[in-house]
Image 1 (cartoon, helix red, strand yellow):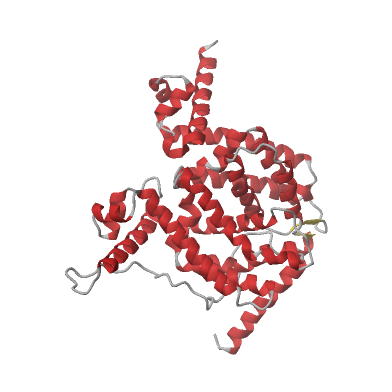
Image 2 (tube, rainbow, N blue to C red):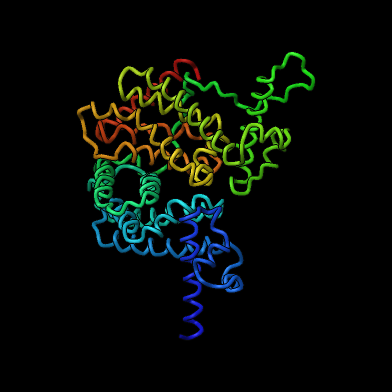
Length: 440
């Protein structure tokens, strides 16, 4: 074996060692010691190829993503242009079936790797989106193709594959076909497309259904306050720690956040922190659960105020969008940092996203369409991708401007895309009329 071949083999073994370590122990547990043990090489050899753990981690992602992009290009290129989105989805699922370890790394472990890792994840999905859009432009304008933004559709596949790969499922053929059928439920002639581009729409006024959660952390109680009970002091301290945890997460990310950062931001000492939380992970999970509970309560209250199911979806989406806009640091934990908290929290996080499908169940009673199994989860995942993109880009306050798109995504598979668009336009027209009559 030549020296070049040996070096190539050693590097490949180190990359595989990183993938194995991360898939087994998560990003936090995939240290250099674990990687070299898996690869069967020495520590000095590791540093011949990589500057540090993150360098190796990102190199592993780059190698896997390169193979995925090659498969997507080939699969999309072989199919008809009007089927580009469906072909890309099939390629993503095919890759997951043929390289489950690599696909798990792409969909799960990369989410815990910090800002640079998330940049790589977002860039890869963006490259796949470009492949799809270049192909779709070759389709005749009158051809029937999916009228939905490609990015959120691809993001939905990412979020849905993650738990499947963690469970070790291998037969993904039915999963792929259900996703394709879901995407095709948005089909309409290209000349009539309205929702192909992910861009903010008109501002939707705030919902009358608002959260009871405070918009900011409470001030510290005055020292020596005679009437402050122990329970009142504890509640004040806990709320300050929760707000501080969310704020520091936005600034530094979960992995880089230290308990000392949280206590400094909260104005408490370490003893107070540990009186409320076992560790950093528990504090992050508490913020996540608080956000989910408050948004579910707010959305449910708004949802049940509607007279018809489409009206209920409109009101529920409007309330949740304004919740995310009002509490951007809490939203950041839910959309961006949640998967970095650790493997023990992932199922809870997946469950919290799936919980929103309860609002979609009534769609099956509309008798206008019958989306495939898994459509509810796909809609929730596509919506989650929109929230992730806006929040990660520091634009959570723009979420209400995406409410019309989210309503369309929810309604179209059940009512058909044309009827869903007409409903959204009707609601927007009502808002315009109200603004004119009120002199706004």
